[in-house]
Length: 59
Image 1 (cartoon, rainbow, N blue to C red):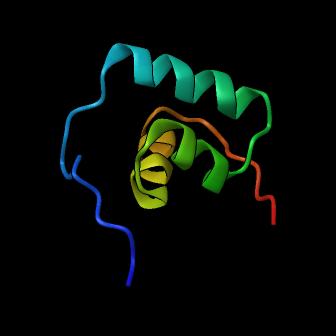
Image 2 (tube, rainbow, N blue to C red):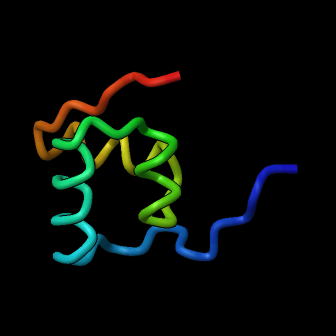
């Protein structure tokens, strides 16, 4: 069964946004960024797209 996220539908804090931008610019993969921010991959992907960031497609 998939992990349960307690942060469902929580707003992004300015600190989280800054960390997202930093990690995306460093070239980290989606899974790594999601884990670092304790957010789902889908949430990170949607926010990055909204902010115009590109996330590396590492496998």
